[in-house]
Length: 150
Image 1 (spheres, rainbow, N blue to C red):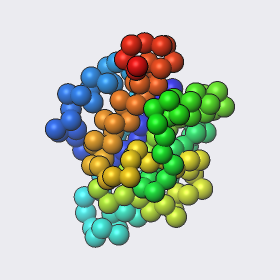
Image 2: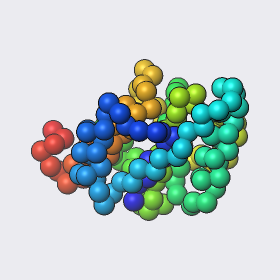
Image 3: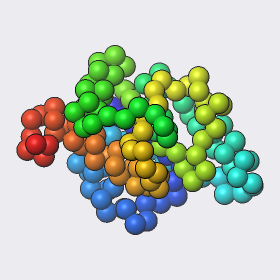
Image 4: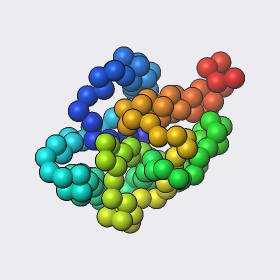
């Protein structure tokens, strides 16, 4: 099983495609929406949300992948191999996607197994969810030799 964790209120502009991928991936992927902190200064929000994330991650033995700028990047085939390898070792993987003000990595670094970057470009976290869902769907297509990935 794969989980995607993110602080998010709604999908707004990306609701239709995100829900379509979640429907296609219904037995493989679950999206965990954590409630964003809306009060306080930016440093206070980052600290509060990172603490919630740390508590959430400490309760699981899953392989934990943080989407983080300036981290390892994969092409689609290598990403599929990465998922396969880690599912063999851990059975379950959780991807953590940042939110508006990102995350205090120093507070959660002991909880993270791997840092991944989708691109050298920066995307809104909702778009990152969509991109990650598409790549997970592509992994399944690669695994099944379907025509989606060619």
